[in-house]
Amino acid sequence: MSPSAATTELLARFRRAFADSTLSAEEARDLRERLAAHGLQGNELEALRHQLFAMAEERFNTFKDKKTVEWLEAASALLLSPSTPQLAHAEVFFSPGTECLDAILGFINRAAHRLDVCVFTISDDRIAEALLAAHRKGTTIRLLTDNDKLHDQGSDIKALQAAGLAVRIDNTPNHMHHKFALADERLALTGSYNWTRSAALANLENLLITDNTTVVQRYATEFNRLWQEMQVYEGH
Image (cartoon, rainbow, N blue to C red; front, side, top):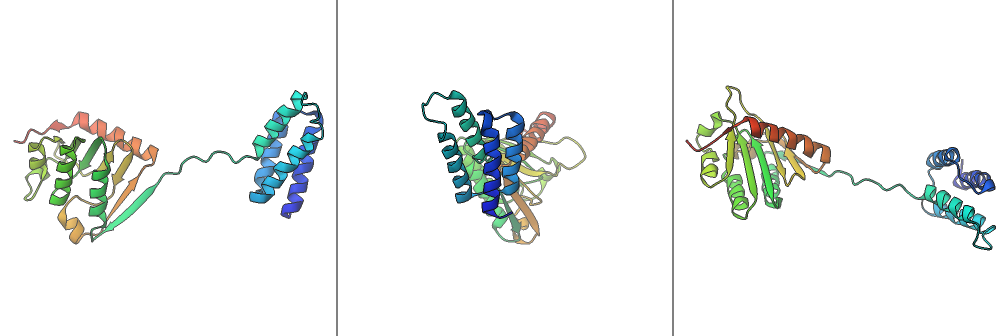
C-alpha cells in the first residue's frame, strides 16, 4: 500500500471510530496496530494528524462538546511516537597497544565518588598511579584481588594498601581471576585484559565499558558478595 493510500485507509478508520465521539480500548488497539503496520513517518504522519484535527473541528463549533475534545486527545496521542528509552552505551577496546590501558585510565579518572575494582592483579604502575590519584582526590576505592598474585615481582597491591586503599583478597586455593570494575555504580568495565604492563605490550586482550543498567547491577551484586566473603588484607 502506497503512503497516500495508507493515510486514506487510516483516516477512514479514525473517522469510523469518531462516529460516536468515543475511542474504545478495542478501537485504540486496532488503530495502534494499523499505525505500526503502515509505519507512517515525518510529513505523512503530521498530515494525518492535521486531518484528524480538521475532522474534529467539523463538530467543534461551540467548544462545549467535551466528548469530542476527549476523543481528539485520545486519538492524537496514538499518533505520537512513544518515548524511546535511553539506549545503553558501550565501548570496546583491544590490545596489544595502549587502547585498553587508556580506557582503564579514563575509567578511573571519570569516577566521581566511588571505584570498585575486582582484578586478578595490578602490576602496571600507570594504573596504580591513577588509582592513587583518585584516592587522593577523595574517591572511595575498594579493591578485590588474588592472594597468590600479591607476592609477584612488580605487584602494586601492597603499595596501594599502604597508601590507604581498602583491599581484600580471596582466602581459597583457587585464583580470584576476575577483571572488572565499577565507577559510581553507573559504569562497568570488564574483559580479558589483565591490569599488567605485559597485557598492553604483547597480549591479545579485550576490554568493554558499558552503562547498561542490568550489567552494572549484576556486577555490583557480585562485587558486594565477594567483598563480604573475602579476607581483609592488612599488608603483611
